[in-house]
Amino acid sequence: MEFQWTYDKETTQQVKYFLKEQGVSKGLLAKVKFQGGKIQVNGTVQNAIYPLQTGDVVKMTIPDEAEHETLLTDDEPIEIDVSYTHLRAHDL
Image 1 (cartoon, rainbow, N blue to C red):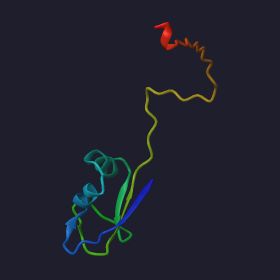
Image 2 (cartoon, one colour; image 1 turned 45 degrees about the vertical axis):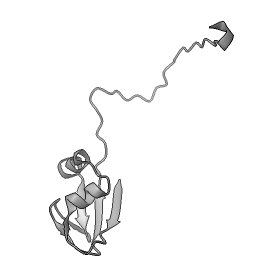
Image 3 (cartoon, rainbow, N blue to C red; image 1 turned 90 degrees about the vertical axis):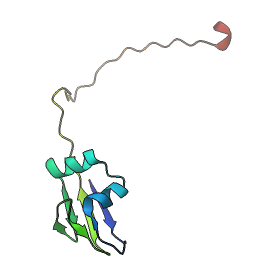
Image 4 (cartoon, rainbow, N blue to C red; image 1 turned 90 degrees about the horizontal axis):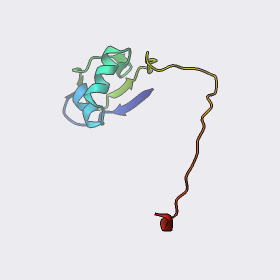
C-alpha cells in the first residue's frame, strides 16, 4: 500500500516529523523502516531524518502483512451451528 503527500511548508522538516503530522504512528514508521517498506522523496529512497524542502513529494510504501504463525489459512468452508433466542421486552 502506498501513500503520497506534497510538503508545502516554507521551513525544512525531517520526514519522520512530517509523517507524524500526517497521522503515521511510530509503530507504523518502524514497520516501514524495518519490515520491507520504504520512504521516497522525489522518487529517491530516503531515511526518516531526511530534511524536506517546499514542494518535495513524499511517498511511503507499507510492506504487505506477513502471515501470522498462529493463524491457519484454509480454503475449505467451515460449518457453524448457530441458534438464536429472541426475547421480547415483555418476556424479561
